[in-house]
Amino acid sequence: MSLYMDHSATSWPKPEMVYEKINDYLRYNGASPGRGGHKKSVAAGRLVEQTRKDLANFFNIEDSSRLVFSSNATEAINICLKGILNSGDHVIISSMEHNSVLRPLWALCQKGIELSIIECSQNGELDPQKVKSQIKSNTRLICVLHSSNVTGTILPIKEIGNVAKEHEILFMLDTAQTAGVIPIDVIEFNLDILTFTGHKGLLGLQGTGGFYLRSGVEIRSWLEGGTGSASESHAQPEEMPDKFESGTANTPGIVGLGAGVRFIEEVGLEKIQKHEESLIEALIIGLKDIENVILYGPLDPTRQSAVLSFNIKNVDCSVVSHLLDNVYDISCRAGLHCAPLAHKTIGTFPSGSCRLSPGYFHTLEDINKVVGAIFDIEKMYR
Ligand SMILES: Cc1ncc(COP(=O)(O)O)c(C=O)c1O
Image 1 (cartoon, helix red, strand yellow):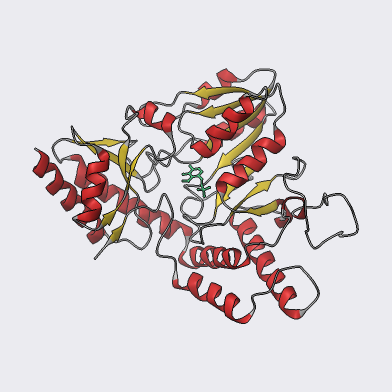
Image 2 (image 1 turned 90 degrees about the horizontal axis):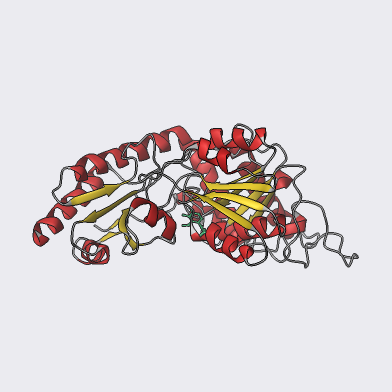
């Protein structure tokens, strides 16, 4: 039986109810939400708004209109960074960030943004004091990920949020690796901006994601067009979420995302988190004693999300992942995982690592099979 160990890239399979809700929408509705007064359009609009409300509730967002849908986390991050930063602004990030944050910021540096990248420890951990020490009079934004897609390392978000609040600096969190598996509370974390992706831990489809903007935080619109509202006006509506949602929505995707969130609520986030912790713990225990296997990250299930990077000494990670795929039918990702600075931080640049990322539907038996396969591969190369 094949084992899909690439949930950090995208989760699969989805809960049955995700497939069912999308199927129902496509077969029995299929209309464009909020475009016209006919029954199907109104019903489709309700489905979109229900997902918005469910997600807002999930992140403890009081006003669901502050939650905007986008195509993925990358788009959400770009909209927020480019909509809020001006020439002369200073931004602080960590060395574990994904290219979805690094590349827009490097592009913005060409337009006069100043960037400070805080070096994390070799297992990806960030000292909040270092964030404090980088603050300058023009610091506008602190932007970090919740957990690394390379090592799983969870960053001290509450502490960083407190630093941001104390210095009246905007705080933006990339929850691509944690939404749906680790509790997130915009109030408790003092978040001004949260970006999320729908197709990983939230168990929805690819092509979904979005962001939350705290009330009072205003950013430039990025795309003008039809919103189904204030159509007589030449100007893009200022109302949320219409300001950022021009064009026909990805309704099947949003319906699926809503079902993913409902599944998580029904199972219980705590149960999902505990199960994923047990899987990653078993992986760490199973792999750490295999000769020539090097593990990266905190190696503590309570300090990392369900991601484990490893290498076999003197064997290229792409060879290991190829063997896992073609001999053992285990899918995992090798290379730099779109996070070159994270690999510099942990000492695996430029070759990268093999990354295993199990999901909620895996069992300890699955993990044992992965450990056995890596044991065999290492023996083969000894
Ligand atoms: C930490 C992190 N941020 C952002 C993203 C971008 O997510 P998406 O591909 O859905 O835009 C990813 C995707 O892997 C990620 O791991």
